[in-house]
Length: 242
Image (tube, rainbow, N blue to C red; front, side, top):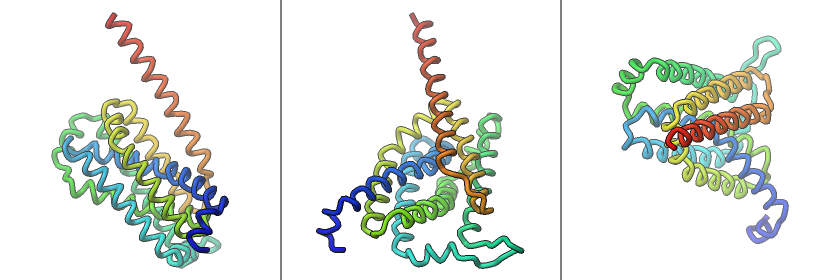
C-alpha cells in the first residue's frame, strides 16, 4: 500500500490510534522504573537519566521493528522439557521479571531503612543506573514490539505509534519523576507496581497468561486510592494552616 492510500485509509488511522494508546499504557511500567532508578541519582542527573533511558528505549523499539522476522522467530521454541516448550522470548521475560522482583524488593528495603538508602545512594553511579535502564528497556521494548506486530499490518503505522508514545513519555517523565520523589507513599506504591509487573513477566515466561487488563486495573485502582489519600492529606494541612 502506497503512502497516499495509507493516509486515506480509515482502518489505518483506527489502528494507529488504538496502537498508540496501547503503547502509552504499556510504557507506564517503563516510566515507573525510570522514575525509581533516577530517584537514586543526584538531582542534577535525574532528568538526564530519564531522557537518556527513554531515548534508548525508542531506539531499541525502532530497531526491533526493523527486524520483524527476527522478532517473530523469538517466539519459536528452542528447547523443551516434557510438554513445556521454551523460547528466547520466554527466557527474556523470565529474566526481566526476576530482575524487577529483585529490584523492587531491594528498593523497598532501602526506602524503609534510611541508613541503607544513604549508603546506596553514595555508591551508586550514573553508569550503573543507565545499565539497569537498558536491561529493562530490552524487556519492555520486546513486549511492546510484539504487541505492535500483532495489532498492525503496516510497519509505518507501528513506527508512528511507537514514536508518538515515546514522545508522550518523554514529556511526562520529568513531572512523574518529580511527583514520585516528593511523595514517599507514591514511591512505595510505584515499587509495589514494579513487583506486580515483575510477577506478571515471570508468569508470562512460564506460559501463564495474565490478561493485562487485570494488572492495569489493579494499578489504576491503587493509584486512585492514593490520589484520594493525597487530597485528604492536603486538605488537612490547609485546615491546620488556617
